[in-house]
Length: 220
Image 1 (tube, rainbow, N blue to C red):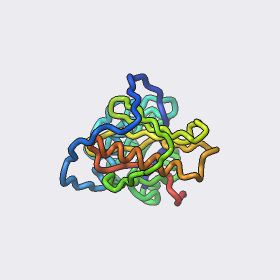
Image 2: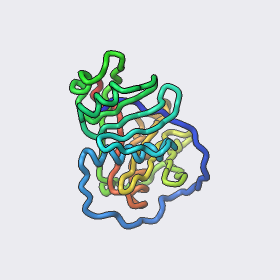
Image 3: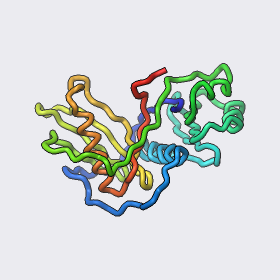
């Protein structure tokens, strides 16, 4: 669980359109994915996915200089560290400062001044990409590569874009981001098919763990 939201930002880069994922590459063996390591991988992937400046590692937390209106900077705490959180929120914080804390909201709220707003709870989810299912007879899917970011777009039978998602490689992790199924194409299984194909594509590029944040089915 964590606190915060995500925003998108435009970027320019050269792209490569391909109809099939890239050839498989070796995977790094014997990685121990602790909650803190998963959160750190999410930060690295989010930065790549959104084209944001690199995060600054403070030891207790990482800071992303996002630089967007209303989202100037984001501090991410891979673990609930009360002393470090207090040091950040009691220091100089301009409007548009965000926190994402891996911890229960009821434990974080008392650490924040009254001027801070608590956003809906999110969940830091992860899964082994080795378990990504192979989809047979899937609708057409276009893969686009922009550096370490792979975007997958699934087309409905009428040619319309039905679903879209992207994933950024962060070492041996793939961080999924901006997953959208168009309103007219929901409840048809397109999102599940798209994520399976994108997960398999990331596995073929050497990623072993998939990471995603979202509200999930339990919201507060």
